[in-house]
Amino acid sequence: MKQSILLDGPKFQITIRRLCQQLIENHSDFSNAVLIGIQPRGTFLAERIARELKEMTGLDVPAGILDITFYRDDFRMKGTSPILANSTQIDFIVEDKAVILVDDVLWTGRTIRSAMDAIQAFGRPLKIELLVLVDRRFSRQIPIQPDYIGIQVDSIDSQKVIVSWEEADGGDSIELITDKK
Image (cartoon, rainbow, N blue to C red; front, side):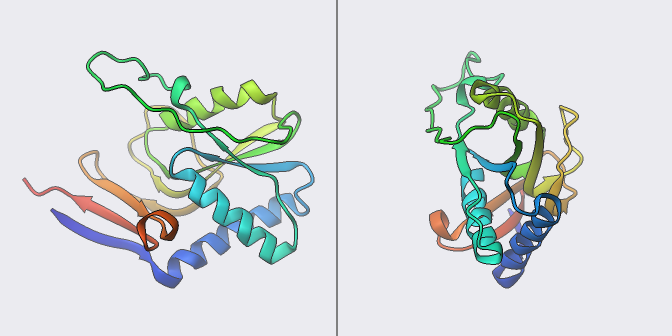
């Protein structure tokens, strides 16, 4: 197995700040925008973005977390083990707001499609934007593109992109893992 560090340390934090700068450019006072982290790993990025925006602008941007378990197209596939649901915490209105969906890695697009379906249970957003820390560009199954990208990674299906978070894993990093066979 070969591991390559794509991003860590100060560059990881700089990437998050750059994403926040782009959000500020597009949403200025965030009066009509909300952040929603997709369970499980997009929540770490959404929380970081919300904290960073507060530090940079002094604004409390509404941020929530969304579980997509029951909206996935593979939820009840035969031969898979039962899926445990996570929690959803959205205590604000999404109706007529710019909803910024936040996830750590965009790969096939299926998670984002599920999140777009799930968010409809909370109202009809004015628009939906997508912010991802890592965009794995060449493996889309659904034609979804991010509006805000931390880094782009050209990888093949057999490779894995692992995002580690200080809050859960003891450190911030993005690794590309290749199995040698």
